[in-house]
Image (cartoon, rainbow, N blue to C red; front, side, top):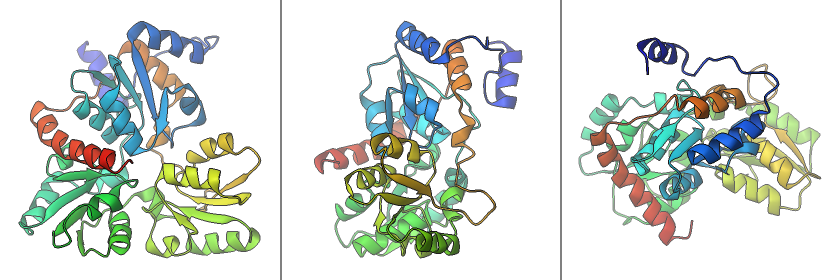
Length: 332
């Protein structure tokens, strides 16, 4: 890689190259995948085109499980930076690519590792559980990693007298504490997408759609969760909407999941819960930095690549593997 290319990547976060407008990107990506023995893992919050080209679509737990077991040489992670880091930690011998390096995460940013380390030192007898939505450095400071799918079960798998620090998401942590009856020490972090749902606007929406079920992700604030008919991970929300007899659903999470809901249930109506700003729905600006064009160029050029220092890989792998072991034993 030339210095010029490296500087351009660091500045923009992605390979900026002209693409022939007559190219069928779906076909080209399929060809490149076969040539390079690559697999595309995509989060539910990606744009529909990326979800449709992906080999596997899932939430953080499913993506972690898939990254750990894939036999591909290259993992293209259509998600955000911490997810690609997790894939690299679990498969250090593989090349992990991210279409846009600037696809970060407001929740991960809300918990700088050097500050969390000082916070952790105040509670030396506490076990540290961190939500997967955090940096590799933060995972390296943890005892167990969790996702919204397994957070409750992981806390419940520990002795009742075990003292626990939970970070970085305070809303998820508060929900887990309520569900488990445990007294958790919470780090004060949050996801900007899930923090800005408007309780007032949702109330009005529910009045206009009295038969609609309201489903919410546990990263939402407590006042919003209190209104929900169902609270669960992204996969949990998807399964609930498929299995429930209701014909209308108001969905309080990133709007990308609605693509899968509509594909699974074409006769049902899905309404994105409104945020407290002028937008109609909640999109994650980081997740939406990835595009089909960037994914194609990323696979074609083998850039940008996500790397993690060896010492961090070793330290962060243990709590992630512990999570995967607990999840497997519980059938999650």
